[in-house]
Image (cartoon, rainbow, N blue to C red; front, side, top):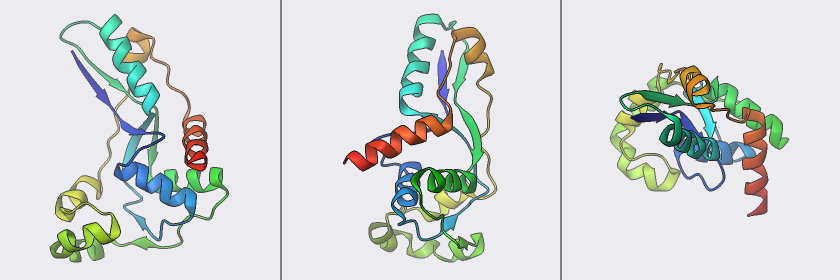
Length: 162
């Protein structure tokens, strides 16, 4: 059996999604990158619950997408900014300008917190959607993730507590 989670976020997340959420919430995200990137967002606790449900109720040989709300990265930034009482970044980095930075990825990754392989990061983000339905997991497993606003509020509360 295979469980396929969407874009996992939540307290203590140090992934690119987590960095984007934290940067937006603190007002430190300087610029939007790849706002058209489509994601299926789910809270880390819902990812764990979906895996356990698949273990307990899933059928051998099947795969289950566990996800939540489908959203674009730019919309996610706007949502986090609104919930955090911040302004979202005003500027968007054009993909062509991002590609110009590929040779400098290993040098800038430590300074800017970006992945060292910018070519791969750009390929994984520019013009891409990671949209899949979790309807089968909801129907067959009883999977019921929290809504995105609730999960983001919980994540932001955890950020403020640290």
